[in-house]
Image (tube, rainbow, N blue to C red; front, side, top):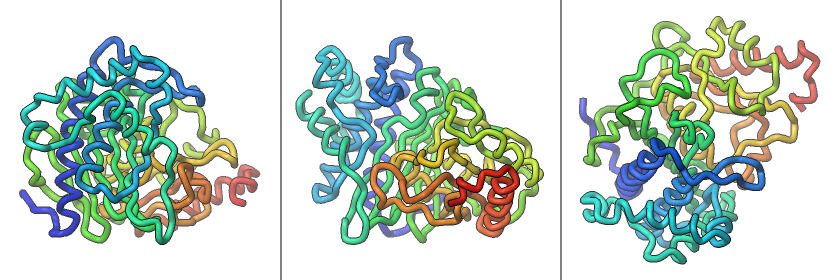
Length: 367
């Protein structure tokens, strides 16, 4: 059944949907290409020309509509400024949609020059979310799951609005995740036809979804609340066992076993896709305990995307049971790991996680 979004954050919703549709076109142009313009950053993580292009598009679009807001993004433009050929490739990618009918209708705003493009990227590349009194801050992850993206697998584009340190709005595009997907989700579950989706949530007003291929702002339906049990098609553990090595060994599989859930269940690298999968009831639980106590999540992997699950009936804390503090900075240094489950089951899941850590002599992870 078609529904209209609530009469709140109307400009934010329209801007996000238009920008995500056009950003997804950029992502999809590169995801199927052999040469994605991939370079390696100082932290050894990959970045592609699509990461830069999408971040520039998002900031240009939101800055045009909300000029007094602040912006946080994963990338900065230092690599582009040092490599003219790379800068040109990003600029050329952006220009592939300059004459697109939807762009011409105002769905998004593009940078005016290469220098403007770099300046926009830099506006978000070193800033941080703030706490009380910090106002409206947009947090962008232009390509979440770059490691899977370069393989032509699942990825997402994330937008989060934080107001005075709290999530207020989130919007996510999963350009190659079909709403028709059933069963466990894998990195390689990308829809070969590019039938993606957009999800968004407004704090206190629910979560919604639509098919990406529709160019209408109206939504197809609401996301149904997540059941309070692990019964039926809504049960499932969502984790990541490959491509990244940041998880503490020997914990996640034991937690899943005690919950009576298949492990690994849905096995997905990108965090934003994991939050979307939980909101869509592809799974019901995710647990993440880092292998080092000094390892922290990054704001752009979670801000906004987490709200999808929370507004669909989920609860999210860290391993200690603390609410996730998005005001801590670019890294969520006031939290350690994640425990997410339907509200009625969260306490049970959290208790099992903590019991397993204690039984395994991992008390330092609970301090």
